[in-house]
Image (tube, rainbow, N blue to C red; front, side):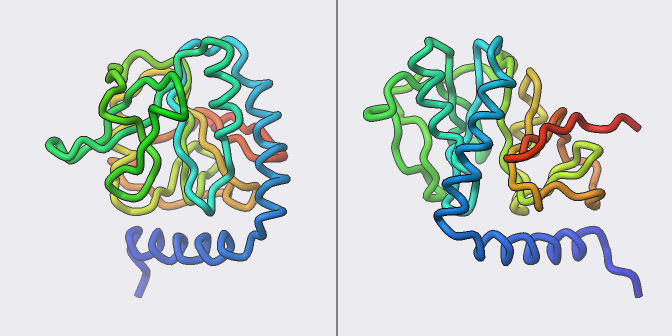
Length: 193
């Protein structure tokens, strides 16, 4: 009996999670630096960027956020709207005062930060468990980011380790795509069907 897409995606998440757990802090630090250098080269003209707050097993894009803020770029982070049960975005200006721990233990903008419409971004950085060459994204399984990405404007750039870029991952109609995938070693434009 063939596995369903949901079962395949679940098994793939477990496999990727196991690989992520084996990455040392030293390797994560080095690969994060390489990714940040590649990212800085890709975003010189972006004026409004939606970043993400990396989880402990994700590549750290925070240095690019800090540098972008210093350069006057409008930077935002997702926040969980408990009333709507969805994510929105808020602008941040000062990391020391504008960041709090959100509902799921992820750093997000404080209540004092102003909300920004999701259709005002030039660039959206997107975390994921895996990406494929067609721009498909495998998230953590709750669909929050898919709903957020469906509403955002701008170029969507998936961010992950090289092993998180796969030939093909299973998809469902609600799964959002990215335009590029950025890893420490590569920048890949999604293949058009």
